Length: 359
Image (tube, rainbow, N blue to C red; front, side):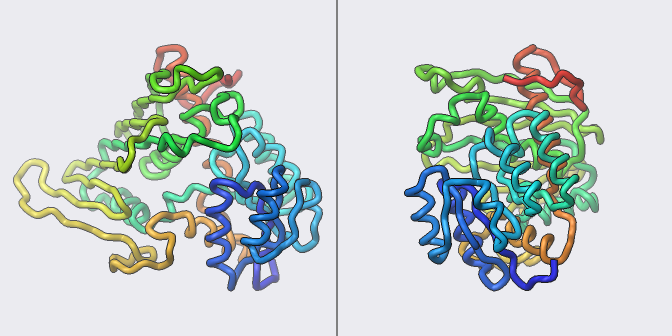
């Protein structure tokens, strides 16, 4: 694209959409929000003002038809993603779409096909790979700095207050995919990104907290056991009831040591067969491959700004996204393998065979 600045149409302004606005405004030298769309006119107007008094609409077709929009940033609920991606692709707009790619695999395939046919870029907004700490960890896995990776554990619990959405779509698994698809999808993407593809998945899940709602989550607690193709094993400990002030964390064990990651950095532990007294604390709050404790922006150490900045670079300079739609589709496939597993009480091999499971 022979332009110095990417012009973006924001789709859905609440929740994660508001966070994206801050990132787009921070990147104003390379990108700008040209227009916003939300089905709630009040929300659309507020966000339009936040974005620099840009035009607003409640009609997606009107947004994607604008000549001053090069790409769309889709921040809507999962059940709306596929149709919105297809509409954007048919209008010739590049697409950044919030996770998950959609709820069902058939819709994911439809959205991917539409973007391929239109020749537009389709990137999933997974922030973790754009965190400097995550990139350093991936480097350690690839170089076998601590030996071969053998086990990974990650805890991902959505905050209970986060579930108080302005609509009830989250509670209907047909619209959200439940906790596995809507929340824990971050882990279903991150584990294969770090460890390689899965061979099989086994999961247990149930409803323990939100028992007074109908419909409700089939998996407000979920534990997923992985076997990767490289032989390593993994565990996702997930749920929808994170207690106040309880942070997530992750551990990766190698044949010669291990790491524990939390709060944007990690600690390195060496010595598996002999005692090693030193714990190395690595702080990654700077740019990629920079260990200095300096903030690159108000949004580090998360990767949200990094993912959006990368999308801008991909469109302006015709590069391939590091988190393409196909990775979003694979993360969804892994999530549905877990769902099928706890529905059938059996381990599930990948790739999934048709007919694909759904709610």
